[in-house]
Each structure stands twice: as structure tokens, then as C-alpha cells.
Image 1: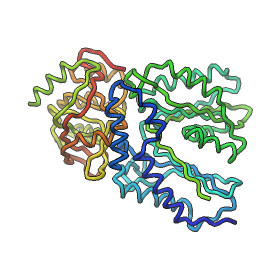
Image 2: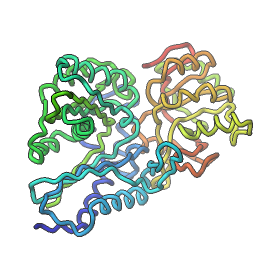
Image 3: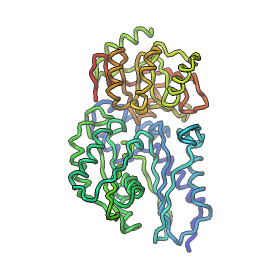
Image 4: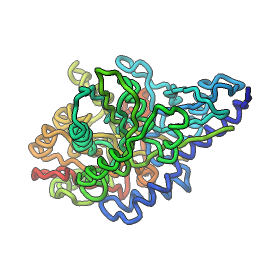
Amino acid sequence: MKTIDSKIVYERVCNALLDVNTNIDPRVEKLFENYDGPFAREIKENMNIARTSKMPLCQDTGIVEFFVWKGYNVHLTSPLKDTLERAVREVYTGSGFRKGIVSDPLFERKNTLDNTPAIIHIFEIDKPVIDIWMIAKGGGSENLSTIFMLQPSESYENVLKTIVNHIENNAANACSPIIVGVGIGGTSDKAILLSKLALFNPSTIELLHRYDEKIGEYSQMANELQERFSNLKIGVQGLGIGPTVQRTNVLNYPTHIATLPLAISVDCYLSRTLSVVIE
Amino acid sequence: MQEDITNTFRKAKVGEKIEYTGSMLVMRDIAQKRLVEIDKSGAALPLDLNGQVAFYAGPTFAKGNMVIGPTTSKRMDKFLEFLISKGIVATVGKGRRTQEAEVLCVKYKVPYFVAPSGCAAYLANCVTNWEIIAFEELGPEAIYRIEVTGFPLLVATDVFGKSVF
């Protein structure tokens, strides 16, 4: 048994949530170095202003999703969900981030005023660590999430076309250049989960196979998709110039003989994902 | 003053960049839904939309600033005809709209502008003043009147029937 103090988890997650909403991922900043199309000045200055002023990069600071990989023998001093919710509440109410969550989604839609609840997934692993992945997920990109229950006999080409069509038809309504996460296999819910995990940075995704050896990565397919996306002329902010998709990842999982679930998730260009490992 | 703005808007061609100084009404999904319901019930609207610019957005407040940026306009398309009937002269948001909405922009000479998305810290510096006009209990979904200076806009659908998308 290994004990980790929940106070440390709380502090690390608070810092990460502040960081992810105000400090642009250097890879994204680099992507815009040579961009001089529409709103180039605003996009670049925004990154600098957010970094120095600690104002959020985007007014939509998202619904926070956590994907936690927790060692089976790790003991925390407080319930993990409480710790994560407290961190969201503290950071979002204390830093002027938008409180953008409503309870009762269909009828009352009443603002919860502290951006909770977060969406929390906890997975058990065989490592003496706790690895917390988080994403500040904006509503515009989340509205592009979709699932196709394809037939097992579906051709590879048609799978590619299904994904490219979805992005072609919808990318102009998210904030491009977007990140495309694809999940193939499992069940409908598993495929969606994989597609969300596929939005993280490649170096983070590399850890997945160590946490669950049944999760595979179709790298060649991701390259082929990325190649086809490069022909889309949607461009930065949907205005026709620059890249439409900045990165694509495809994760896979074993599935039922009768099914071929295909899920697509999208993240906006700001790529507000981060992970913290606590040993 | 507002008439000048309307004329400037109507001359603007697709792809053209404007640095807008003036006022906008911030409103999004639920606020517009409520306005339509109030109007249908026969009651008076809680604000005057005539001659105003509608900005599809939901702000947050940080470091003494209103931090704001556009949300997806397509979700607001079902309310566009209503807004136009009440005198809205332009709309501001992000992303491609439905064909039906683009037809309305041309028919009623109400251009659609996009503002840079995911640039809220930058746009915060363009907002000089703000006040809540209606539905305060909705928080970021309330209707605000904002004053902006040098607010970057790009003509996405002009009144001549051209769209940037």
C-alpha cells in the first residue's frame, strides 16, 4: 500500500487547471508562428495577454473532464472525486473562469455557479502512481462529438470517408485548426471514451498502452486521415486559410463480432489538455 | 449615429475586416428563447432591439475585465428572423450558418460578422463598458449591453449574398 496525501493531489490539480486555461500549449503557439491569415494578430496576441495577465485564453473555460489512472494499491487520504470537484470549484470561482455548467439539462438549466460537477472517469492500473488527465472542454467542440455504429464488414475506405465527411461538414463550427480524436471498437461508450483520450498529446497517449495493453493505436490510419484533412480548405477559424486539423489520433479496442463502433471527438485549437503524475 | 453604422455594415463586403467601435447586445440560446416566448405571450420585451447589433456570446469576468468571445452562430439561426423583425441590424458570432440564415441576411440586409474565437483575453481589452439588461439570473447567459472600441470583426455574410464559408 502506498499513501498519497490528497492535499498534494488538490494543489497539483488546481495549478494544472489554472495553467491549462491561461498558458497556451507551446506546440499550438508554434503552429501559428507563420500564420498571417485572418485574425492572425488577435490569435497571437491573445496567447501573450492570457499568459501575462492570467485572463483565460477563451471565455468558454469548459466543462472539466478528468481521466484518472490510479494504482490499485494507492491509498488517498480523501475521496478522489471530492478532491477533484473541490479543485474545479476553487479555480473557477477564484480566477474568474466562466461558470458554464447547468443542472437539469432539459428543463430548468440552472447554473450551478461553480462550474461543477466535473466529468470524472477513474481507472485502476497496476502502477504505484496516480496519473490525472484533464481537459477544459469547450461546448463548441463538444457539439461535434458523434458515434457511428458501423457494420463489421465495413470497408476501411468507408471508415475513412465517414470520418473525413464528418469533419468536412462540421469543422467550421468549432474553432479550427481542431484536434481530431477517433475511437474504434469496444462498445459505443468505450469508443467515445477512446476518442476523448485520443485528444491528448501524443506523449501522454503513449502511456495508455502501459495502463491498458488492450488499447491500441492506429498510427498509419491517423496519418492517412491527417493527409486527407490537409486537403480541406476550411482553415483557421473556418475562414479558408491555414490548417483545418492540427493533429489526429486513432485509438482502438477489441469489440463484439457484430459491431464496429466508430466515435469521433474534437478539441478546439487551444488544446487545453494536461496531465499530472503523482508518485 | 446608429444609422451611420447600419449604412457602413450594409456596404461591407465579404472578407472585409472592420474595427468596430460602438455598442452590442450580448445574447445567446436561452435568452433568445425567452425573448421569443415573451413576445408570443403578448407582453413587452425587456429591451429594445431596434438598431442594435446582436453578439452571440457568454462572458466571464476576470481581473476586472469582461472576458468575452463569440459562440457558434448556427445554434441561433432559428431565432434570426425574430431578431430581424425586432430591428436587429447585424449579428456577430463564429462559424458557418445554415443556408436559411444566410438567405435572411441578404433579404433583410442584415450582415453577419465573425469575431475571432478563442481570443477572449485579447477581446477583453476591447470592451470598455458593460451592463446587464435582462435575465440576470442566467449568469453568463444573461443579456448584456457592451461598449467596445476597435473590436475586430470580419464580414462573413454580406448583404450582397456572398459568404466567406
